[in-house]
Length: 65
Image (cartoon, rainbow, N blue to C red; front, side, top):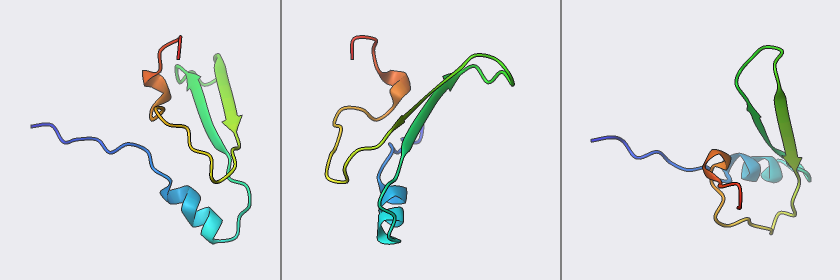
């Protein structure tokens, strides 16, 4: 039986906020791992009380979503 993978959570963000950090930036990247090849990055900053439901893994998002 395969072990169930745990999804992302806010543990690290909460640690930073508890330590007094005001801004925590979430990032994502896409690329094939090439050392100098094509790479696309995105960064997002949301208010602490804002949640984005239905998004747990960017690699599982459809183009329409």
